[in-house]
Image (cartoon, rainbow, N blue to C red; front, side, top):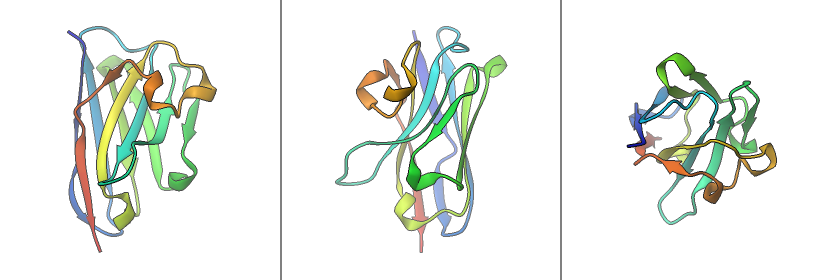
Length: 125
């Protein structure tokens, strides 16, 4: 059974940092595109970042310079390091994976086959 399990969320003050993790299981994900999305209350799910197996990376413009995505294929895990957190970063952060998404579609949520349950990030001002 394929599972993606996010962890690392929490309540932090503005300006703080967090590292989110997404552990994949059920098969190897070393060749998958791994992505992070987030959804704030009352808003649509939005793309944050994605990385493929040869370490091409894309970021949403809104997070460039503050978010870093990385992966450890030996651990079947993808990470999202977040610096300089802002209250507008408050959202549920979701991990997603898919074996084959072309780079132009990395920001399209429905293109991903597998999703985690999400981890809440709350940033206080």
